[in-house]
Length: 294
Image (cartoon, rainbow, N blue to C red):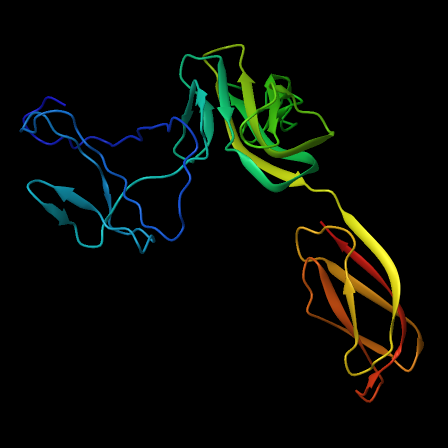
């Protein structure tokens, strides 16, 4: 800035893009620091707006002249957007993605998703995109929304302008080429998506107001049968298949004195089944089990 007094005009968001994914330790405190590479003066300075009503309890705004000084309980205004890359787009005031002014194409990259283990998984996406321009809502006063079959409250739908691509990796080092995302299973542990939105007219405003990415992990089922021969200790079951999250266990009692079953010591590797009579006494008996999980 080059002015003799502080600028009191409306503030705008400035985007700073990381060169790559940043791994943070949840047990450590981090600071966002803005440093100006210039000599501070009345005409050379940086303004950063404060938020006096932030709900971020651990935040604390500070500034440095000859030493660090805190500004009460105020927070410097910032927001984190899940975007390791992209071009030709802006973040609107509502937090939506939109094609930058004068551009006809934008690219947006999701962060790297970690499934935590190698498997065949399907990627599901849900999105809302609209193109807004000077459109008439109703040219026929007796019929609403009659100017276009694709006109919605947020604007004109343009589904043909959307392209989702996927890139996968088994080790987060070697990555596949970008390919069009299809409804199919991908063998991977890591993946990321690229969204390309194309507009024919740079005068229109294309807005992505919702983008949800989900991973459908493969179901794992294991069935078997066993028997409680010592009522007091029950029967320990060791799963044959590999589960990655604590599964669900269903027990069917086949015969014996037991009428009710109880599952204890449940983990991803096994559990213990105890049978009970109706009066609460531990019992013996045969049962079958169904383990379901991922």
